[in-house]
Amino acid sequence: MQKPIQDFSIGYTLLKHYSRFYVRKFFKTTTIVGLDNIPKDRPVIITPNHQDTLMDALCIIYNVHGRAVFMARADIFGKSKLIANTLRFLKILPLYRIRDGVKELKNNDASFEEAVGVLEARQKLVVLPEGSHVGERRLRQLKKGVARIAFMAEERNNFELGIQIVPAGLDYTHYINVGARFMVQYGKPIPVAKYKDLYQENPQKAMAAMMDDIRAGMLPLMLNLDNEAEYKTLETLDDIYINDLYKGHQSRRRVKHTEILAKKQQMGEKLLAFAQSQSAEYENTKQLTTEFRTLLEKLNLRLWTVAKDSYSVLGIFFNRLLQLLFLPVFLLGFIPNILPFYLPVRLTRGIKDPQFLSSVRFVIAVVVFTLFYLIYLIPLMIFLPKWWMAILLEVALLYLAELAVRYTTWFRKTTARARINRYRRRKNADWLRLTECRDGILNVLKGL
Image (tube, rainbow, N blue to C red; front, side, top):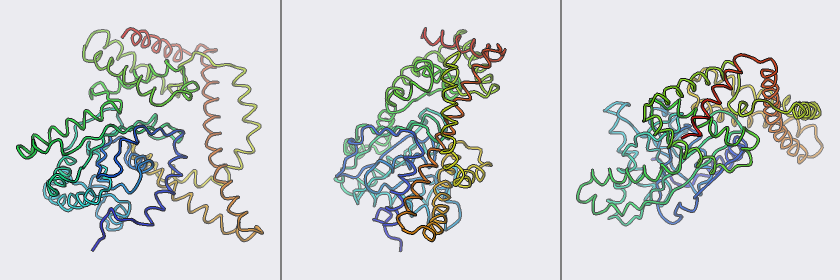
């Protein structure tokens, strides 16, 4: 008989703290807001938006105290007992959906029973109420599974458990790249007991009311460009606005993630109304935006590079000199870590889903770095006179690997700035048209 999933596990605890180190290294900055909104002495259900598969879970585990049990879509469990046992070790329960087959829905009974057990043990349950991930900054329709579990647990305990539902919002500056910024915000807890009378009168109305409140709690914590048909245009317009507001990557480093999200939310509301107007001005702006994206891809540029028409030649020259000076440090970090750097990319080339890609690469990187550093440790322990010297050198190599990644990013950004200057100097037709599109778009945005 399996022990309760929420029970303490030394293996899980060690893995949690070990992976936390890699999460911190994966993101340039992590911002946690409202952590004190999660009650410490009551059962809690956390309901975050779902954008980046496994990374969403890791970023919740990273900052939530205790042992959080997750509910994930059942198809990731596959038919392999090894995979199922591994996911259970990671404290993940399967949640079956209609798309998994009507016959499979009955399997939710066992999962819901275990979920109730988690809450009765006053542990934390994390349910992603959208049901599946999507690489878009919008909140989709919420599934009622979280309400069913909450009411099932409270009803079984005469509404005396005191379950609190905590809405959460996740925000990434980029889904794939190492060095992105991440933020999670926790909203005010919603007590399940407030729906007791309505539930006893009409369970369906109570569940609908709860889900409406959860949605209302999540919306202020995330960017919600809630127009599926126009999403790509709205996202690009919002990004162009923020890019111009902070004039590219450099100044944005000094701005809090909370401020950037607030600015994006404010402009997002204006853009949704703009798209809803279906005016000729919106259609013209949409065409400019489509052309802008096409030219950006053609010129192999990132959005941040086009916040300025040119960059300091002296600054680029100075950066190149520094890069030459620090080249030996880069090589010391890169050469011993060639395979750990290369394998996660090579082994995931066939993955098309960008959000799934980042999660798989992260897991592979953690496994590969761990294995390689254990292998490195053997000769170091043999040839170095003291064991602590081997450990110290391993730690130094790991930090040199981080410096190598940062050096690579620094080098690429300097190259991009130099390319912008070259396009401008040569009056490249695509570049000139790109800046025309940008200026036309900004004129419209400033008028909203």
